[in-house]
Length: 184
Image (tube, rainbow, N blue to C red; front, side, top):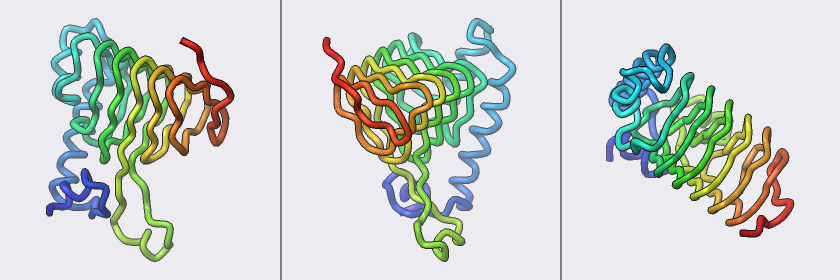
């Protein structure tokens, strides 16, 4: 198994591996070009398609935006990602239809070893993040590695989501906790 395959398979991998590093460099270069564009710019759609392959025409990522790879991001239809979002997509990041990601949100899949001696090595593992359909993440939300947020959830501004959130939940705080069920 290559280091890149290990990365996508939730195993510890060497983040200095040439294939992994080349993917990061590619994304950094594309993100750098994207920063000078706006959504209506004629080059926006082709550049965002190159960075995030398969992004639906109905979905938008507002620059500035930063990611590790881009090809680890899966967006549903009618997704809107607001200004200043960072998606560290060593692990897959999947965002469902009609979901809104507020400004300054961070979706972070990398997870480093707890043992300090192991942390000295150039290794990490990436745990996927899944956000359901019809969700809204308020400004500045942080979603940690391996978290699943159910359908129709609202995550309050500034919350840090460290564990799974069930469908139809309003969750707030650090760490985020469910404060009530949202009727539909």
